Length: 476
Ligand code: NAD
Image 1: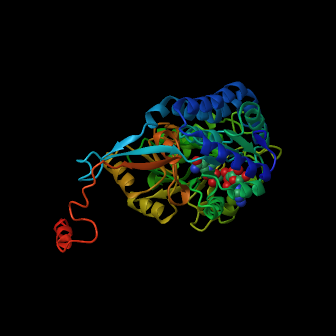
Image 2 (image 1 turned 45 degrees about the vertical axis):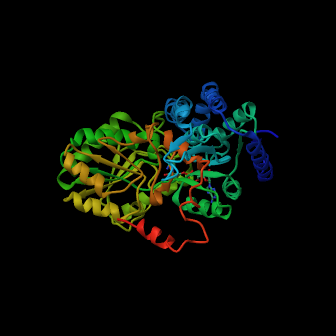
Image 3 (image 1 turned 90 degrees about the horizontal axis):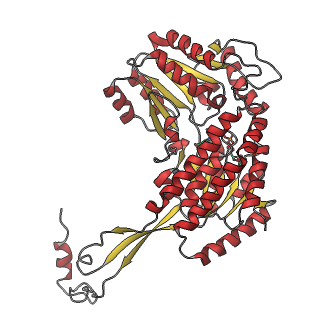
């Protein structure tokens, strides 16, 4: 069988074969794990140009340098970190046996075992990263894997699938391409773990399907990541850093700043500074190879629909830079939507494109209250130099991750977990936590030779004093 699967029937057959191989394998040593990870690293090193070209074509405009930074180097970071650290994560962990067995020679440890086969469903916005970064953790934990790239970036999916086909034994890594139907059929399979990156709505369906086979899931979902700009923030530098973050991948990043809360008296200064910074990064829109286009017409209509609705509601919208939009391209200026009504679509849906919502506030406590009324976000950003306020915001909110005085940065941490909470997801990858996510932590207890229970009157037929002995142990 080839590693590039052509049907769900082939996927089912492969999973059965991978299961057999898993059962026969015994311990998966560090060398095997490292070799699998190295093959993915080699693939990226050898194919990076073809992959960046495919991503540029799939987006209808995405700078190859950005694709190398975001997807190739991003995935390489996770893969190399796992390759270079897995030997620290693998060893059995000794644990304290309970009394009195600890005194009698009882031993206990936790063994981290591969779960088996991990299925990984990726998105179009980071079409390599969302597949290969979780794969680093899955391989580090000794698993086999099957990937399902997004059909919205088909050229990238095809280059990746062919490269995997040329390099991998399908018993270790395989790939299947396709759209919603293949995604559904994929989620119906009896994987030993399923990683899904995508929208919250589809994530719910994936979890329902996985539940039929009791497949544990890691859900990397989206949401409306808020930014709290404190009064102590340097408004010019804050605006500059947010303009950089918002311009990244044309706003099509799961942790892109979505709702920006600014002190009411600094609103105009923020808009001016943000637009100046954004225009310095992207002085023009049409034909600007540095600006990532909206990935397809459907997503463009979705973003423009939200803006149109806000405009009809009489909401102020500031465009940076304020230039006419070319119909033949899907690059757009960034739109700042100022104080839209709560019920507008742009306040309800994840923007995931070249727009942000600016909300002015008087009291930071009200901002936190408003954030907490919504779904738990994937990321939260705080800008300011008031450490008491910073701590207060951290203590009174819950989000997947946080960056302070910048945006997006925490996701680049290989040595710390990345994942959502509540509606923004569950579970983690990256680093030791990713290894733990894809491992089964099996507790092993080794009993001592001497069994004291009979001598201590703990076995049936119970001695009349047994109950008093038990009662004497119930203490505070
Ligand atoms: P999506 O949910 O539409 O699709 C994701 C994947 O699921 C694709 O491979 C797709 O083919 C498949 N799919 C689509 N519908 C399906 C269905 N009904 N059943 C089974 N599979 C299905 O998401 P998208 O548009 O590709 O990505 C954008 C979303 O992903 C945003 O919400 C974004 O925030 C989120 N995201 C999250 C992270 C993260 O790490 N948390 C990273 C990137 C993107």
